Amino acid sequence: MKKRVFISNLIPAAAYQKLSKRFQVTWNKHQLTEKQWESRIGPYHAVLTTLADPITAKVLNAAPHLKCVANFAVGFNNIDLVTAKANGVCVTNTPDVLTEATADLAWALILSCARRLPEGEKFLRTTGFKGWGPLFLLGQDLAGKTLGIYGFGRIGKAVAQRGRGWNMPVLYHQRHRESPSVEKRYNSRYVSFETLLRQSDILSVNSPLTTETRHRFTSKEFKQMKPNAIFINASRGPIHREADLVKALKAKTITSAGLDVYEFEPKINKCLLKLPNCTLLPHLGSATLETRTKMALLAAENIELVLSGRHPKTSVLR
Ligand code: GLV
Image (cartoon, rainbow, N blue to C red; front, top):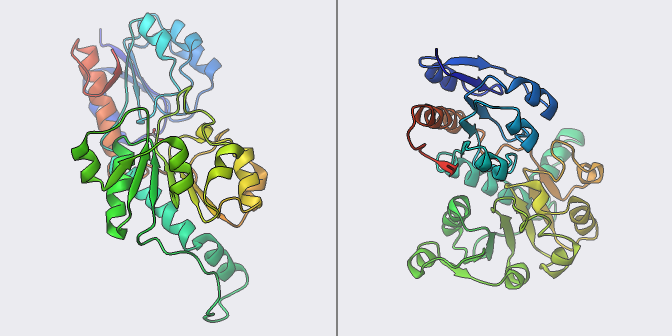
């Protein structure tokens, strides 16, 4: 009997094509709630999930045959790792293949905020282009500014790498310090969290969501940042407290924010939607055809490996 695999959402067909050669695959193509997961996961040996799938203890405990949860994302905060481990379920993610696309998107947000692109575009579409103005919609230069990175992993480093094009000195903060050669490669310096807040002109959040990073950026932190600072989050929404960010943007405690993620995603704070000094995107970090196809193939490969008793390529937990 073929092993059974469940694909939870409308992802690139490459994963289905690969998996259906060896397994009996069910392709669901839309989002399931926790309750729906609980009632459907029972027969499957592996599930290919997306970041909005709540793979909680309840869901995992309703899956007696489950050997692998292959998340179609680099983040895996949607999965209860403790229960997965206790149940002997391997959890995998899709790092590396999405690093460049996600760093590009963080930079799209940086440029958009620095040059006030949403304001310019909205003005042109609503009021109409009235002609060039010497004082119209002035933004700020990026060349030589200090780029601060919170979470200096693969994506944080790729964001720093792009900063070289603007001759930006990089400050970073995370739990551990990198080796001197890595620091040199990225023109970067390890600093305390407080220094990162006080000295960054651009502060980009690139860390995973953990109990330690949840609400790391609240009113207290925004008040320590420079008034010209641009806050970027293309990682996970709950790392900043959204209501506090709204206050900081309204009061011009910081200049602007570029967000790809939201605290209560997909819900967005209504006040945020009305503020001119932010660029808001609907979680597009890895959203290119090439990258999403690579993610689908990597997740499928991880399932193939685990179900044939081998080590997955990119495991979070085994
Ligand atoms: C996207 O947010 C991811 O974690 O891959």
